[in-house]
Image 1 (cartoon, rainbow, N blue to C red):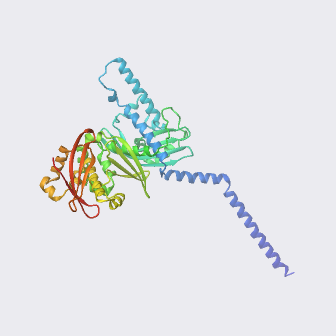
Image 2 (image 1 turned 135 degrees about the vertical axis):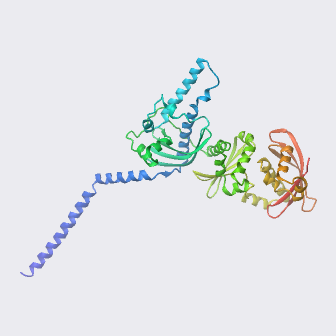
Length: 449
């Protein structure tokens, strides 16, 4: 009898442990029912959505949104009444102008986000009052673009950069909501972000709107394109062209650091270069492009109609640097070709480099290549050299190589004919005298008129 008692106690302990295990499992199943999991996931997802704007790394997204901003800004430009003010006082003409302006008001109203219009109580009749400061010269430069995906169709983009209007330049932010299901978008200018308190609150207010889909109002649509290499090259060139006169500091800051310091030095020197060549810069147009893929970057090499170079080195979709020639910084490709070349070919390559500098109005670099004795005799200062070149050569010079000679030891001469690229009938003949030095160094002089 006494032996049975311990056995019963052992069995009872085992049963109690089993019951406790079963109860624990049941409680875990209750805690993890599908509804609770779904609610917890939704909460975690909301928190993640609020604070994890990610940098846009798709060119299709980037240029789609860039085109949306362009459409918005072009509409603002069209609302500038001065654009239509040509002294007309005919009732018929004035009526046509008003009808055009009214259409632009309707387009702008359609582009603005629903929450924005509600916040500022905007309607067709008072929209001019809100946007009266924007005029036809408005330019926006994108610096950063981030995205928050709400679902598979709806995305919210935050774009910051610089805006120019009425001779003012300031930092500026946009929010764009895009609906991929019907290719529509809505714009939230910076004053909406300020009204909401900060960027996070503004994004949250747009994200949580019950009517999350964007209504197709005909005007608020965008078209997604292929965005090939030519499109991207011309995009970069247009950034340069749009800013170089009105905002040279922006372009100066885009120049590759070592390059700008060696070619221009200070911002003021760069501004001087722009001012001196303003009339000619305005005429430049995108003409050709070449794409070179490197290990860590892509280079979009653009040429205008005068063969000026614009080399945009894209480090990633939203970061690039700019150089305006291939001679200021040593190029590995040039050095390899130069070392393999004959003396005649080296002289030709150096003459070509010299005239690249002349055509680029880089008189400082060209002056540095002249033989000291020749400089002391003819051009004691860089300004004297610059004056001579401007008076005796052309704005853009084409070279034709005529006669080469190496009869004098270590001295090479080349008779060349220079043609005015803008007027083929104008020609000049000069003799280049050159001495080759170590590596790619050389000094030269030339015959004087």
